[in-house]
Image 1: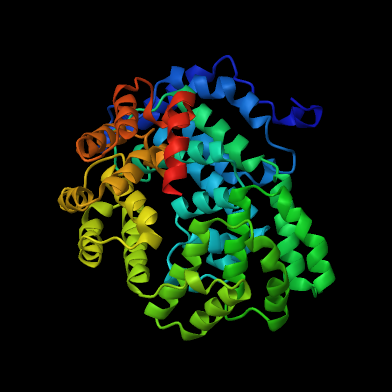
Image 2: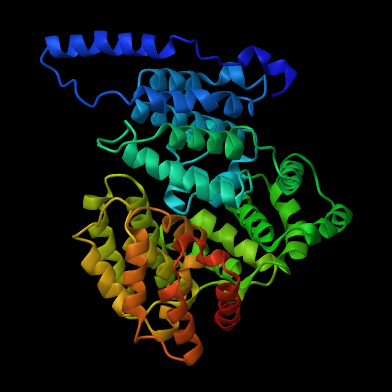
Length: 476
């Protein structure tokens, strides 16, 4: 522990258990005297001691500057001391969300919103830091991962903590039991993966570039000098930066000078943008058209014209209509209370798709159907599941392959660590069995069936991923 954090040292007094026991006795007497339930209210003293016994190691990961602003952590430990672990979990998540929003607000908000929010209508309503509270927790975490404010592993851990917060904390009625070691471990995850995590070098460089584009004039010579830095970015970073350029370019409030800067830089970046991302820009243009956002439709066309990308403009607007329906369904699914919200969105999506999924959104559509079919980890939306089964049963052999490989997707892989989702994925594999063709595909399917470890680890298994790499080349 750093020397300058000595004042934070937490020491359990010898009579700590006795004091807590006395507190319990007084409160239980009060509850009984008023006829209120008094059994199974508090977590055992030994579990509380598990938290406090390991607290110094975890708190020591915070800087001196962070400690005075960690009010929810104070409430966390107060709830632990009271034996109310469900409330403590809620406070811990509040601190994590507070810190993540603070981190996002110090980055480039437009870039974040463009990568975090899939709904065009919702994105258009998000302008500044005051709108961050309109972002769902799932969007906040995913958007932070997309722009590398948190790591891929951090995203996976935080998604699990978010799941537990939704279904095992005081934020939602439940009868789940939490242990002290679980609770302090999740707190360490939140501190390590969000609160005390430094920005990556790539995130710093992208932040600097976006700031320069918005505040300075970029000349042709400047653009040529900046271009080599694109070679240092990963494919994921290239795609996200291109999406950021698109979002900035198509915002009504963007100045002519900023658009001119993007016009000079985009051709150097475009060479490395993958086909899926390029097609997505065409789909977004179509969504502007469907929503009658005429000004943004014109700007989206201008953006594609910069790089002679007219071929990515969809001939029909059906792709955009379906993508909007996909976004609406995922929004309903990812928010709590989805059981009654999902069916109407599922029916609308099935109506639009019929038996023909347009190629530009094929992967988005299939991954969305797999995600909602896997459930939210807490239960099945019984009214919606028959619709999901019908949509899954109408897939083609090549589309079933996309569904089978969905375990490599970040969102799906994260869900496979949740309760009941692995069972639903095996049910999906059973549905796929007999539908796929080709011996290589069937061999991979058999390997997935017999995989004995946690299903979220399949994409970390070398021999499975070697097979997957072959199929990904085929799918493009």
